[in-house]
Length: 274
Figure (cartoon, rainbow, N blue to C red):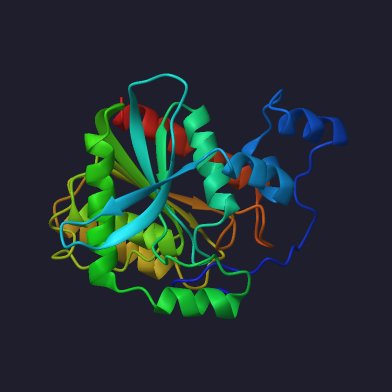
C-alpha cells in the first residue's frame, strides 16, 4: 500500500532489471559499471555498492546526534548532495544510490532519520516513520547541510533529494536552511504560501499520475502556493506512473520514467550546483 507518507511494497508486478552472470562478476570485482536500476534491483550488487560508504556522526547545535553515511567522488573538490530515505529507512538501496551520485561527481551524504535498522515490512516502516520527531529531524537535517557546506572537499554548493517520506523532508530541508537545489520524488508537498515563504532554492518535483495520495490535487495546490509566495524557480514533472515509480525494488517501478526522472535530476543538479 501507499499512504501519504509511505512508499509501496516490495512485491513486484513484473521482473526487475537484471544483470547477466558475467556482468555481476565484473561489477563485484570493481571491473564494470552497471545501470543504477540494475544495481538496486539486485540485493548482492546493491550491498556491494552500499559497502563503499563510510559512517559519520552529524551533531546538531542542540546536541542531538545522527549517524549518516558519506561517499566522495574521484575528483575533488566537488558539490554535495544530501539524500533522504524512503519510509523504509536507510537501506542498501539508498546507499547504492549515494554511491552512484559519487560516480556522477558529487559528495553524497545519506542520512538516517530513524537511527534504527531499516524496515522490511510496511508495518515496520509505518512504525519507524511514526517515531520521527519533526523538530529533531529538522535540526539534524540542518546540521547535515552545514556538515556538507563545511566539508573540506566540498565546493560549498549543496543540493538535497529525497523519495516519498524523504521527498517531503527534502522540501522541509529547503524551507529550514539554505540549499542550492531541492529535488522531490513523490513527496508530501502540502504547503501554504506562508510555509513556503522561506524557500530560496530552485525546486524540481517528480510525480506520478497514478499516485492516489501524492496526487494531482496536492501538487497543483503546491504550485498555487508557490506562485502565491512569489516563487518562480521550480519545475514540476508528471509521469504516467504510480507512487515509488523510481524504486526498482518495488512493484510500481517504471523503467522508462525512472530513467527520465534521473536524467532530469542529474541535469538540474549539474546546473544548480556548478
